[in-house]
Image (cartoon, chains in turn brown, orange):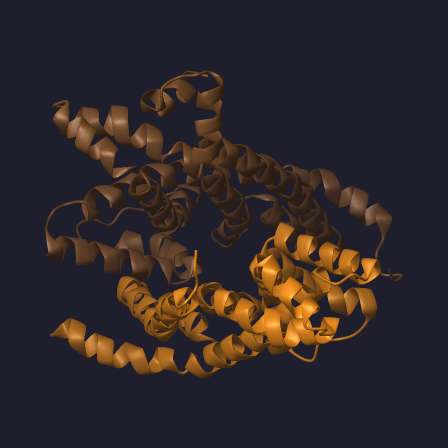
Length: 249
Length: 222
């Protein structure tokens, strides 16, 4: 590296940038949790048996998904307080949860949908035949089969959201990027603190992406029908009980 | 009625930034596509050094976030190497292009690896060279599989162009922010119009992605 990279500045900035790590990680978890919950809201509206509602919701999701999260963040932060009637002023942290959470909930809603659609038709028919209520059907039959296979995909989105969270520094959430920028402005040394931010992201997201890949392989074998069939054969359990038996294991 | 006249008043002001947004989008998309093919083909090459070096590039750019890379290029490159990347426009384009190039190179690599082994074996049996196999047999089939993902990532690149307003480029969002700061009471309308402009920009790519999905599926046994 050139002469302009000074290690003393690097170590001077390190503790200050690290102060923001808790906020960044906390915001990521908050956004992810919000997106996981809100993803179900989309699913709920899209399953209403009314073509008009479904197409409106589909377009709203498409709209949120294909417009920049930065603009949505600005909307929540600057514009929401002056909206008549429903306008509220929110903390920057809450704004970030709302904006980033809703943005990614549209992706997570799609993941849920793919999971639900992959549940075998026989399961739906069986739950009707066994006179399950709608609530019980979803809670006991459909969701337990639909959601676990999507866990690796959800994990990928967790990492993607982690990398999206520094956007919140623009509206003043004091995560690592905001800390680095303010250190830079104070000491007129941006290079070292920003390098630290890059290294922190790399150190956290690379190992987690490897973990997710391992999880994916594990999940694929766990939910692969052929593998399940072989397991069942080894234990000489009739095929009918296949999925239930595997779940207990 | 007041709203309609406000929309008519605001929209042309915002559209002053349209040129920058579109030029950043096109330039960074082209850079991303070129980088994707170069890096993707390097990842499947037998040359160990090339393979590992591109691997490091891909992991570094996928592992850190775009906004950090943008600021890093903006502040660090002039300090570190004493050179300017030309202008803020170039900084934005290079950051977005390299970032999405890394993501897209994984798409290229995945599609090449997803082409059936039998195709390679048949090409070997027909005495084709390595280069011929890639150009005539594998790539034409792989490119079709890439289309939907390329469409999706182009929408992502379009969304990412809004970040260049943070390094002082006068794009749509920049003009939106300027107008908001002078007239806060109109902020909701301004940002809704900004969102709609971005959505209209995204529509052709949404349509192309769907088109790409049907092309990718056509005539493929799965």
